[in-house]
Length: 330
Image (cartoon, rainbow, N blue to C red; front, top):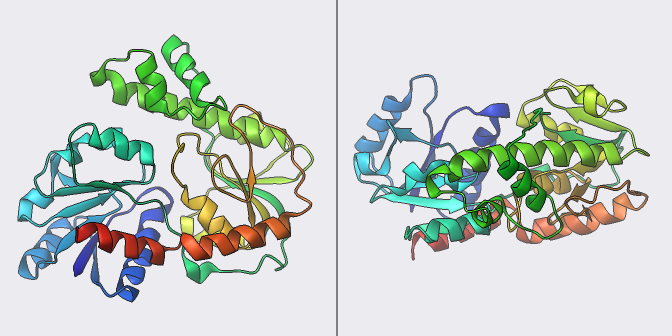
């Protein structure tokens, strides 16, 4: 099978790394791959190469479309959109006859299937096995976090009510919380975006504030010092540059409250880099949304070793490559 990836730039350049690591894993699994850079006006150059030598599938981590229309229908080759953000923001990708979609949270798969779109499946993030670093390596950083501080306050009662549910220990998704408030379908994407921003801001700020007995280092934009004054704040860095930091860290903090039945990449990359990960989902240490408490990380090395072994056994891009090939030949 031949799979061609489209690659465009995004915040912190993470999708370029994902596409490269995933294509290499697919090659190891027996597929053939090509990467096409479509940024900086190169889309039609990629289009020419595709039409001259068509693959079985095209694929992208970016939201690739042409004037809002799915690109698979353009050249009548199935195109797989590997969605990293909630599917509700990409409903235009569900219109094409040649469109396929994967989601990193099972709740998004259920949402898309309820719209009678059949070419959808769950494919969580994968980790790059080449980043394997033993936990015992020298680690000068105690606790690290990568992400922006997007100040987001609101007086919208529906946003506040939905956010309260999402940040409760009850494992309620944003969509479930909004539907319980009888939000109209046409308003769901707008409200989803508001609740997403609000819950991310409050979860990460309150979680980092709670870690009072640890020296916290943050790489990201925004007024971090206003909300976590004791943290050491650094300028944001590209995704690839975070690996070196994680390889020098005891604990990586992951705050992603929209993930209820999915897996965020920072959990996998932090673990492969030999750090213990503090997260509300699958990770080395865990916290419950809405219950932010200071934690002891005295056994971080043991926790990191255990979860690193689990990630290597089940959650690398090589595992995702085998899963993807099974889905595509069904």
